[in-house]
Image (tube, rainbow, N blue to C red; front, side):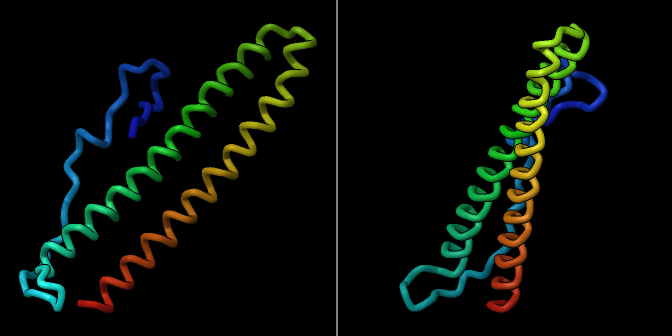
Length: 125
């Protein structure tokens, strides 16, 4: 996931989520009924969980990047004070608004998913 430094619009302030360490929760090594250790099962579940969260955050980041481009276009259109450009800003601002709604929904889904997984793991411990 790429994030922009809020004080700079250049790409020099970017960092990636991949550069940061992803902590893995500890697990036990007791065998379950399938012959797979709890550690292996938890590791697979953790990897799938982290993969899902990472994909979701990348999707959010993609929409945020699209909004950044749209906002730049709106600013350029506004500075031009051209009638057609100002009219096109209406559609651009509507798209930005729709994207913000999508982002809110994505974060709500992430929150629910995280909470569900957290409570499921708490119940199994």
